[in-house]
Image (cartoon, rainbow, N blue to C red; front, side, top):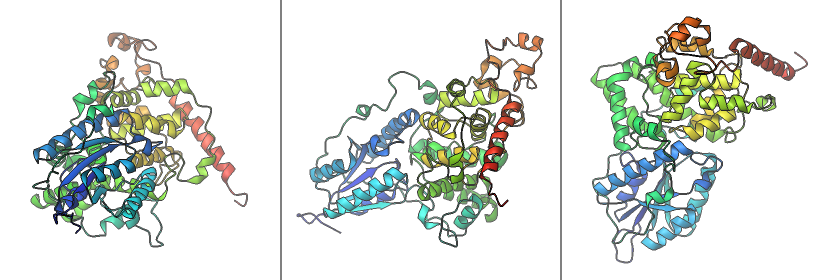
Length: 495
């Protein structure tokens, strides 16, 4: 351990990123263990994440998460120093101003940040500083799981089996009992100076739907195992019910860790005498696995946020972009109630039910034949859980060009999907209230309702609610014809 001239342990900087918590935070634990004063810092440098700077909903969440982290640090006699980038010179200046010899952080895996962080670490070490990074976000870092040929996995099931074949994750780290403050604090900026909050009040729905922060994330974990876990496999598909975990934004911002979830699940299983094979093979844990798989793919295939993983689909010719249809989709005005409900839920709350995400993504890419990248960008700006790895995996899966992709001929029927997973129409009624008085039999296809039913429900198609912007059956056939022609053109002559 390095010491300063007075013989006391040196000051350490903890560089917070997407790890906005005190529990199970390896970087914070390492800084406290170094023995000296600890200076927690958050550096706002969105341009360094280009072209995937945080979107509007993510910025909203980040502001509140940083405020929550600040309060948690202050409760331990510390504080969060907020600074603006660029990151490397900001860290160098902070080290000089505080006399810090150690800089600790937790790793991120987005392509732009991997290169930046390596340069930061190399530069700091060359200057004689201790610069160490840790894993706080994943059960298995992307390079630790490989096929027998030492390559990356591209199919989920064998990937997750390989993960489960290893030892259980280590126990989560505890919150430090004390965080030593420096003799004097460096000057930072106000959190409000980052201008993360909207300048116009579009965030009312977000404020009603969410409570960002570590404490709220831990409450959500407890809720999962008290109320939804045992019916999760079925409940997660029902947007009309509270059957999903809603943990995704807390995981993305690092307010909770997957290791915490794993061990709460393990402890719950032991308390309730569930067989180990039951909880380890559960759909709930598999959803954590899909998040891990998404990061595995993004690391090994860094071009996938813009380009198909299955490179043959680079040559697919999308029709000319229909901007009118794209706008109708983003606004939830397609004329298909389950699609419109999902997109309105997204705009209002910054979140969309996972089943509905698949439905609206299929509608965009198959019914409207609009490139998946357009949908990914819209989700990126409007989701509070906008995660580059998961967003990319989801959109490529639906469009048929990614790992474990849905077959190109799988086209979700927005009518039957609504009838199956929102059988009483409660989800549609909540988010498309102009249809609320239609019966369950009519609400997912209002254009098929009788004139009397429409009049009794106060619905005038084309006025109070739009006609469908495409005929699903015709749109499906158009997409299949286009995909079949593309595949036929790609078929080797020898076949």
